[in-house]
Length: 200
Image (cartoon, rainbow, N blue to C red; front, side, top):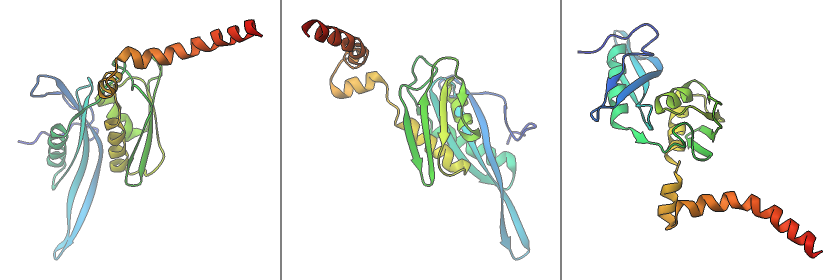
């Protein structure tokens, strides 16, 4: 039995529980009415794009089409749940590094941000970050404004995100080797300059 949408086209609907017991929140990104011309006139249908996430690092998107709005949303939500991905987050609030994503004519840039920045992004991208659970991020869409392309480009960028632990294991190094070198480099520069002054 299909659920009836609330006011606002399905935004802020009741949370659902995933198989693992995590609460899932779904957001309706866009809904479009499409028409098919037949002998007796026009036959209308609805296409919905939904983003689903647990606000703990897992997110997915799905599209559904049906003759009625609730059925289209249900199809899109089910597909989004089956296509969820896990995104590594820094301190549980932002991305580990800046990343770019592309899909068709869609192109996006995602940048990590300091605490308190908030979500600076457009509508379709904001829905992805809110369901994902990211609290601080700066995002910009540079290409197509089509919501489908924007969401798919955002997911392309998120799949390119990597945590220091995964990079260290892939390169056969320790996490401290990767992060320590970056932090020690600025401190080593003044020491080298002071040594040159003494020698000179």
